[in-house]
Image (tube, rainbow, N blue to C red; front, side):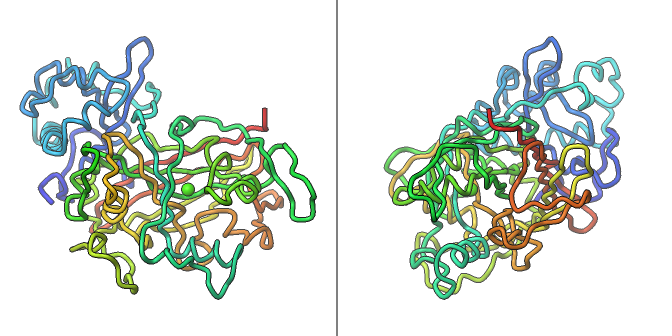
Length: 423
Ligand code: CA
């Protein structure tokens, strides 16, 4: 931790009480203003700070980053520079916007161009995602799914406590928060049907996940140790990995998830750096089965991130359906990266690694409708008296993530997706 994390730090930019984005956060995103090209930005309170214009003014020169890096519709070129650059940039921004620093504060002529109200920008998908890996690292989620679909006595498969199980997903359908998603069509086969049918999914689900963004490329044939792993992580965002359970159930044997998982997944637009999350580091669950040396780690590698999920039927108030926490993850991100690369698989800046559904120990903390409504047996009741076992057309799913400790709140904002009827 350095003084960018100091809870007493204040900015000369207005930050509302309870905001996810105090000066200790400084998340990165891509803003699009009317009539200009997209630029890299950071956020304090409800103000976006255009880093291309700021860099052109010379005030970011000490970072050693050329202004053109910020004249971009993706963060990848910035991420590719490596951690020393992001860290130095974060420090310079923290100092520039600190309440007692007059350099930019009193240069009002620059404010118009550099400081933009969030109402005036459109947020773009911040990363050009190369490869996308989806893990399955919550023990509660894996256990619940095992109980529902296989055998309560042997809910976890034999490999589960020996490796962070995952699969390679598809990046083309990952979209930024606020993008509508069409209900997918696909093959399904009910247990008592003889043949499969094609039609819209009847079991559309959300998966509450956090994603981390690969921050440093590696060479094919090399591996990343758990000790080095955090140098390869740029930051984190909230991820809703929408899933069609009936399509998934029929297609997934023997090669795993396919079309039930790649019709749309939503990412929150602001990427929170690992430096901003440092004060919220915490120990994970005890791993009670001996693990191979390449998965062993030192220190606290989990993060205490509160997670809320809401479903908002059209014309109604959102109903909170889940409160969970990232700290429940059995496998941590360092172990996931070590496992991903143990065979020599290379990673690139801008790769996306999702945690898998994050469920906690109690029923209100389950991170999917499948678990919350327990395979359709416990429907959720909504404000208007309607019930849901899965997501209905025109519902909007909203997920929020935030950390709170010692009076400091660092958040991710939200990721939302409205479900439209099948095309
Ligand atoms: Ca998933």
